[in-house]
Amino acid sequence: MAGPLSLIGYGVGQGARVAWYASHYLALSRMRGPLVPPGEAPVSVKGRVPGWRAIAAGMRDLFERDWRNIEAGLYRAPEGLLPPSRAIAASRHFFRDARKVDERRLSRRHAEVLTEELRRRYPRYYLQNFHYQTGGWFSEESARLYDTQVEVLFSGTADAMRRQALVPLADHFKGRDQRELRLLDVACSTGRFLEEVAANYPRLNVTGLDLSPAYAAEARKRLGRRRSASIVEANAEAMPLAAASQDAVTCIYLLHELPPAIRPVVAREIARVLKPGGVAIIVDALQTGDRPDYDGLLEFFPIGFHEPYFSSYLAEDFSALFAREGLALESVERAFLSKVMCFSKGSG
Image 1 (cartoon, helix red, strand yellow):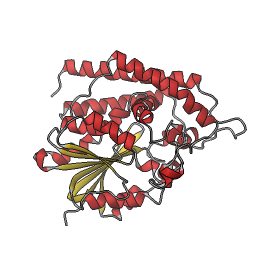
Image 2: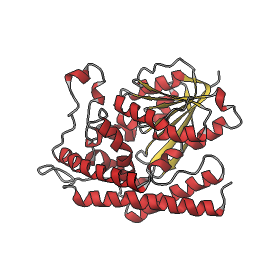
Image 3: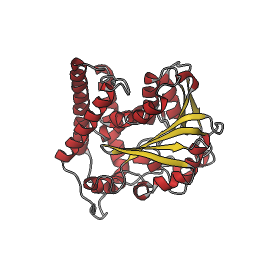
Image 4: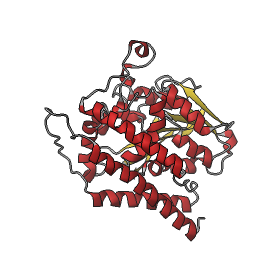
């Protein structure tokens, strides 16, 4: 169990993290152009939009829960900020690219990666500059920038939200031999969450799957030479893994970026590779009604960013979607701007 000094260290570390990334968000807000391009109708949302006090309260609740989980031994305490030299370099890189992102947003350019060559290799819905980011999912620069961009967007809370997926994982793995278990992380991106999994379960056999060569390469760098970890470049619609081969499947922030017709396909694949008795843990954005005071914020998100499938995600019934594939919803936990859904596959 963590002691008082550990709590102090945690508080100082997470406070510094929020201050660092929130300051980037505020600076970005001052330097960017108008919320909508000239000539477009003003932004109008129907739902309630939380003020800064409500946002701060949501952050505080998230970090209090995070600490309780650490204190209970469900997962280890997070590492601190990057070393100053690396943090400053990442910051400079972020702001240099931010101007390009804003220019792309104001001109609504979100198909720069749509080329004939890529169309022969990747699904059409994948060939977009999601978030108006440079290079879409296809450049090394995009992969290097991604983690900073996400933390700035969430003011330093993204890692803490992802860590909540470790709670149902701890319950499922409790008392079991890690060496005999397998976990698949679908759309593993740069391997940020897999790094947490590997640190907490060093003997667990883990596989990360991602469609982007650049992001898969970044994930391999992050996981280093861990013998029990591997990264596979593949489409989540057709995973190159055997049926009933995984004890747990995690999926972090993927479903809101899939077209409605593709979500059932990916859910079917998750169910296929999961062993009977296994769990699927989904972390993604809140949906409409999860926190009514945040509904306006969720409504605005696809307007301010290029997120073409987010509006349909907000209304998706994931309990019914996964139930059709034989996965039962066991729990749902809110974690600030995210939610954690845990599904189980029957042992029959």
